[in-house]
Image 1 (cartoon, rainbow, N blue to C red):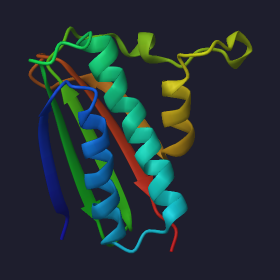
Image 2 (image 1 turned 60 degrees about the vertical axis):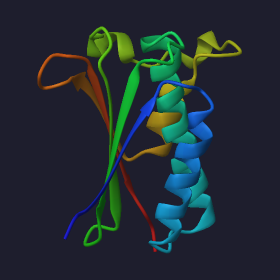
Image 3 (image 1 turned 45 degrees about the horizontal axis):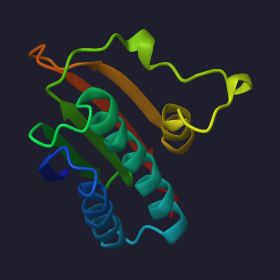
Image 4 (image 1 turned 45 degrees about the vertical axis):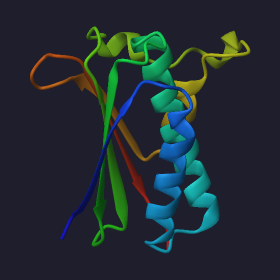
Length: 139
């Protein structure tokens, strides 16, 4: 049976800490090791910060939607991160060339490096964006 955890929160940067804590507790309850928990927290944090910073421009009245789906038979989590901001084309979400390193802007690269699958699309109802990330955990 797939287990579901849904969290809806205002686009406030301090909420990232709360989301990390909730994710940490959730994954530890599944006996995921500390390194994999940390990597998953980092990827999800980067994704949430990107929504708050780039989509909502730190507007605290906006809402971020996170759904975590635990698939025990696969020992995997799927993360659905949605917003109701302006739709961005998937091409714009490509990570930058690593030869063009700066002191910021590596979030998408980090997410893709730490997750097993990453897809980006407009929400089904066209009212925003959806980032889907999947992480398979080693025993």
